[in-house]
Structure formats: C-alpha cells, structure tokens
Image (cartoon, rainbow, N blue to C red; front, top):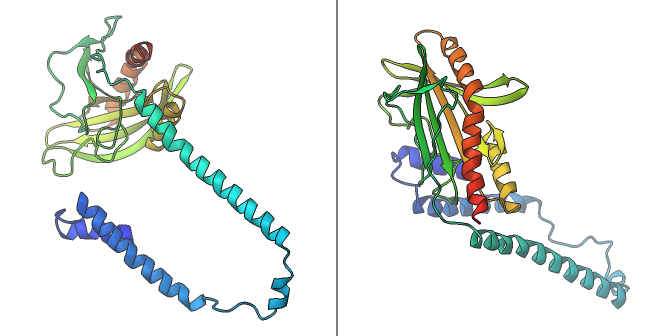
Length: 291
C-alpha cells in the first residue's frame, strides 16, 4: 500500500511530487497511516487479561534463581545481538577508508589479430544512459560487410549516485523520441567450451533496427542477472577486493529478422570476448597492484 500510494502520487502529479526528499516525507506519512490501520485491525484480536488458570500463587512459586538465569540469558543474548549488529558498520567503515580513490586508466579495446578493424564512422548515434561518472569505451568495428558496436562501462568506488546496477542505467530513456526498446529476453551462448548468458534487446528507431547482447563483469565473474551481479559485488567488497564492475554491450543491425544479427554478434563475441575480458582484468589488476 505504501509503495503503491507513493508511485501513484508521483504518476498523478507528473513526477512533481513524491520524488527526492518528498519521497521520504510521503513515505513515512504513508507508513504511519498503514501501521495505524494495521494496529486498529489487530486490536480486534487483542488479549487484555491473563489466562484465569494462571494464579498469583503460581506466579509466586517462581524461584529467584530461575528468574536470575532468565535475566542473564536475556542480557547475554542482547549483548550478542548488539555485537553482531555493530560489526558490519565498523567493517564497512574500514572498507571505505581503504578505498583507492585514484582515477582509472583509459579502457581501450582493439583486435590484436587484425580480424576486426576499428571503424572511424560510428555504426549509430545511439548510446546507453548511465548515472554517475563511470569510465566508458565506445568503439565500432567491421569485418567484410559486418558491423559491430561495442560499449564498455566500468564503475569503481560505487555509491548511491554512481553504481553499476541501478534502475537509472537504461538503454533508452523514458522520454526518448528517437529510440525504443521493443523486446527483452535471455540468451545462452556456447563459446567453445564456455557458456555465457546475455540479456538480449531489440532496439529500434524510425530508420534502424539493432540487436543487443549485454552482460555484467564483476572482477572475474560474469552474469546477465542484476541480482547475481549485486551479490558478487557485495561478496567481493566483503573480501576486500573492491567494488569494481562493468557492463559490456555489443550490437549489430538488421533489416527484417533479428536472426540476421545473431551470427554477426556471435562471431564477434567469439573472437573478441577474450580481448574484452583481458582489458577489464588489466584495469582491475592495475588497481589492486597499486593499493
């Protein structure tokens, strides 16, 4: 109810209310109203009196020793809870204090075999939208009559306004008048003996159609799921390996059937994925070596 009311307030006010600080204010107001309603409903089942079978005489038979043991157990458990709850904020402070805030090196991807040449003419004017200040590489490649766009976005020292997995990181913004994301799905790829799952999107404008494959890279781990990406990021941070992460996007155009682009994307990813992964690992490794 609370989430629904906040969303509807923003929707009906054309995103003028219930955003930013207003979101917190309205959120707590709705929270209070909902909790008041729940307490009122719960009051119909309240029990105001002790069971008649529990007499004062029975209560008086409780020994001071058992009462003391119960108190000690309660205090011990409370102390344990406080200790466990304190560990994580302290450890988070330690991790944040050990963060290297130096800037990342530039990311550059080229095919050492020369099979895929760099195309000085961009395949499209479309670019994904990311929040914060990540390091980015936008490159375009061609081989024979096959054309590919490559977008690598790398995050480090992530926070609320600068993070890899975020609802504000989108392929197409809501009010984009040129591009539309018309379809999304998951694809499992077999690259030799390696399997890779990617998110597949169909991107379309009035004149062009593109097929997109994209996935997350988290310090050596690869996944298409934002939830798994968050898990790897948290685990790496707990282990003191930093919060480095990137999203890799490749795209190819097609005229009628998206399958026209599948073979081109598959060929490029089979040839260039080791190069892309190696560049990401080099950026991450250089950071760790200087810590």
